[in-house]
Length: 312
Image (cartoon, rainbow, N blue to C red; front, side, top):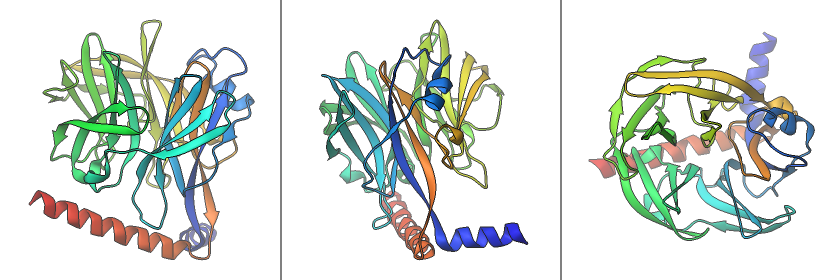
């Protein structure tokens, strides 16, 4: 009975709020050996609160500045947009800019996955509402982006992660039911082909949680723990032992959970040579929480209806 009452109270008076935390390394960061130690023992700086969700941070260091690309969402419009928070080397916030080149998609956007190819910076944002996976290129860093190509269509995939392994490119994604989906291509522009290797996994949590990293000839991927009861509970760092058309094999290295800052969730983690960035969840009390949730769901359903008609 107490559990049932707690669930009712949470539904009526609490809603999720996500924020972004950034850490400047005090000492050398040797991923993944001492990543958890740094996260646990180094005080992070939370970015100034401007939106209900400040989540899915990806980070770039350039010209003695730090650029944190992230999803910004407020209950007013229910739709995530992509922004970039700009900080100096000492983490003083200098600016917060909306990314240009995405408005025509007219859908919720999140997880701005960044990668370099031939010195050019690209992004694959999460655009599952359109049932498309779309490649963008930076044309005026960090603000202006240009659509390059729709890599996959007629499929709703979340938090796509591009991985280069043994000379091949792989796109690791999850369906709306959090099932792992893998595509492969010889080059970024495709064509991309779906493969169905035998899965040897350390757990059933496959949704992307950050960029992959190849260190000392070992490939590491990050995934987030999402259960039916809790979204974005923790992050898993895994070693990718084998990835080809026949076999996907991974092993668990370490789990990053919300105890690193005594919050209620963490589901994206990225880093550069000098900084680590992650998002963190708190359930906030509000007398209007249930109204916000209802409004959010209604606007999402309306937007999905509009986007569905676009495909007809």
